[in-house]
Length: 452
Image (cartoon, rainbow, N blue to C red; front, top):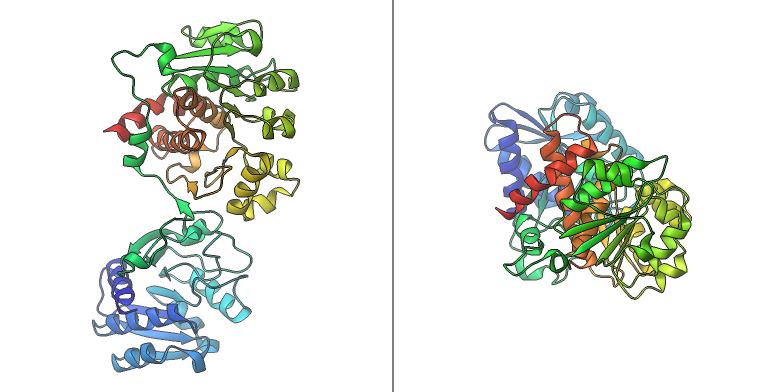
């Protein structure tokens, strides 16, 4: 607890800038997070900060932490009289609930959380924002919205998965020496540049287009020819040696990418491929989806393909399958309202992967990748809100399909594809609106950034 309090106090001091004479308010519950806040408050008080602690459960407040705060010159404020104190604070520390909190805040705590949000000060959560669920990222009621979360020992899943991630703000990890106490296997993984670099396919001196992999793209329709163009654009940037296209948008594809191999005979007559992408902008062409799913190579199913595919055919496949739904498509596949998927993203992606016997990439504000065999779910740490643009998902499908054709496993292809796609979105946007074609063009820059 002293290590946690020291790290928390340092973070608060850095956020304050001018420490002496600043006003800090601690929102203190009955658990250890309240104790962390009190001990950190004592450290700040000894540096000349005016620290006030609002005690939600005075009779169950951490005794050692409270005594330390009072000895250092801090004071307590009754919860019912805290409004002016909280609103005038330069910094508010949320120590109401810990990782065991479930179901949102109770009314008295919810009132303080609302006051913290209305205050002029920076809101700092201790370990995780009170009211969010640490293991799932769910928010089932009122919760604190923090500007910064100072978490201890290890990242909690709820700090990385929406909707809880939006409540956490910027996250700072403090090592408190847990080391060997942490579990050997993680519930959640977030790849970094070095992890992705190890998974990128790199051609050798003897490589040809077939050794590098050929990806087939069955996408587009008379109504949505652009989906085919964007899926092909993503595939060309994904490391495969060649792209074969089948579908009604061949003229648009060839006009933009003359290097693409076009087939007029459908998937069964397209020639040799090492992976297929089916569904982006495909309309109601169920026969093409059915033909692709029978192929004995890895298959990525997206968009209209998810709506048209036979679930039994997916479960019966021997080759790897990667499904890439957004929340609405995932809800339809699970037979639940969209809000249920958006509120429980981790549970939903695991359920989909298990039910369909496939790797599932759940797109959205936080992209999650779950394998059908269980194990850790991967959360994508790149990305930007600017990726919420028409056609962005088509680029992602082509990119992931190309990685599949290059021999990358479905789990890794989904994870690496999401990482590169998110990074490309950041680089292309650079803080301004971006189109899907810009994202596709930026994949090469993202690839170099990761590799180097």
